[in-house]
Amino acid sequence: MTDPSLALVVPAFNEAHRLGKTLPVMIEYLSAHQPNAELIVVDDGSEDRTAEVAAANFPNETRVIARVIRFEENHGKGHAVRKGLLATRAPIAIFSDADLSTPIFELPKIVDPIRAGDYDVVFGSRALDPKLLGQRQPWRREYGGRIFNYFVRWWMGLPFFDTQCGFKAFRMNCYRPLLERAAVDGFGFDVELLFLARKVGLRLLECPVRWDHNEGSKVDIFRDSVRTLHDLGEIRRRFWSGQYNSAISAAKSAIAEGSSVTPTSF
Image (cartoon, rainbow, N blue to C red; front, side, top):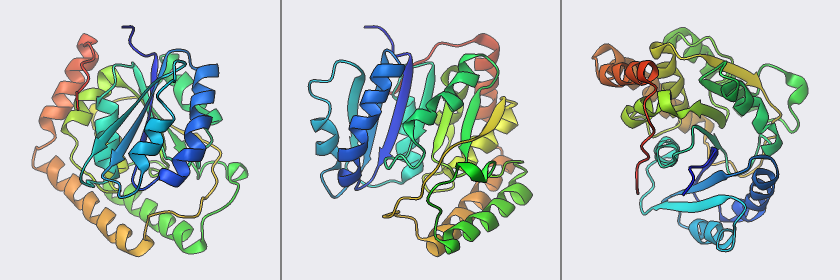
C-alpha cells in the first residue's frame, strides 16, 4: 500500500454536529488538490456521535485515505493531536480544528513551504494580518489571547504572535521524536510543540491565514487560561530538569540521519 503524501488530522471532542458539515468539505478539497492524502479524525472520548458521524462520511470513500481513531476517555486536545499525527506515515502532517475556523483552502500556505524544503514547521497565525480576519472573537477572548501571548513571548522565549491557532503543519521525519516525548495534553500543547522545535533548531514559519470565529467553542477563557499558564510552567520545569533531553537528542539525530517514519498503531 502506498504511503499517503499528506495527512490531515482533526482532533474532535463532541463535534458530531460540526463534522457532519465540515468533513465533506475537507474530503472534497483533499481529493481535488492533494492526491493520495490521508484524513484522520481523532475522537477524544466524545459523549455524542462524533465517531459515528465521522465514520459515516468514510465507508465508500476512495479519493482519500480516511479513518477514525477513538479513545474511550477524554484526555485533552494535545493528546488527540499527538496521537493522530503519530499514526500517519505521511511525510507532512497537518492538524486542523473540526470547525474549519481556518478554511481548508488555506492549506497550501502551511504545506508548500515545507514541501519546498524551506521550513520544518509552519503554523497559521491570526495576528499577522488583521485583514484576513472575518468574524472576530468576543472581546474577552481576544484580549485574553493577547495577554496569554505576552506570557508566551516573555516566559517561554517564543518570538511569535499567535501560538494557539489550530492550523499547523510538520515535516514528520524530524518532528516525530518530539511528538513521541511531548507531554502536555491541555491547551498549552501548541506552546510545547513550538518550544521543542525551537530548542532543536528546526526552521519555523508563522504564516498569516484567514480565520473566522465560530460559536460553540469549548474554551472557557478564565478557567482554561489558568490551566494553560500552568502548562507553561510544566514545560519550563520539564526542560530545565532535563526531561526533554532525549526528545531533543532524538530529533537532532533524525535530522542528521534522515530517519524513516514509523507510525504508531492504535
